[in-house]
Image 1 (tube, rainbow, N blue to C red):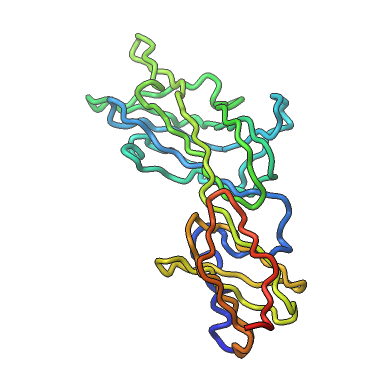
Image 2: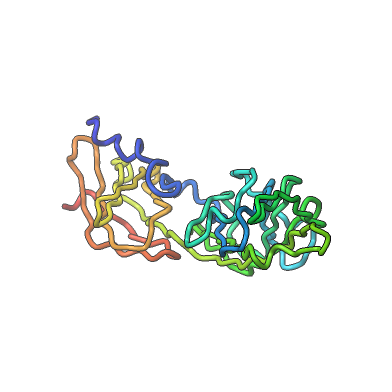
Length: 263
């Protein structure tokens, strides 16, 4: 087998968001990132200690409906580092497709405020460390689509002066949920060709994967755009190229059956 046939596999996980999937991995899940940004406040620092991020899958507020995002970046974040359009990744996970109603931030004890005069004071969060800060989302996750939930903090409104030189943290956060990537799926025949698959953008960004034993393939994490899809077989005897494959950010584009025996 030629070395070029291995390139799609080696690229998986290096380009875009978890792109390497075959149709056999289709388990009715969507992928989600939770990112945080901020509106500027009149302080030098607003430091928030984030320990856990959870998503609620039930329409009711039952405790068993909460799912913890497993890929979490816990730590103390200065909200003012993420003003003016900047953001940071808090957590990500694969979640069951379907409706989500809320997101919850569980906070730690190391929340603080640095004032303009250089003083650093503690931020009290009465419920943040126990039940968590709950925010409404009300969004539908479609199977195999990649989403971002953006937490847009308002630092100025989130800080409440108590009048005795102390401050409370009562987060005012706007949530924005949007699909950011779809995918491409289909079936190759004959299945025994087991092609490697390139999905190539107009800018030559490439992601890829392989068809499974039955010939099915699913390439996730494909951002909205128009692509060239190339199928590479051993010895390049049955290679095939499809041009102008259009994908939207909330769509899994189905190419149907791709017959590699026909040039």
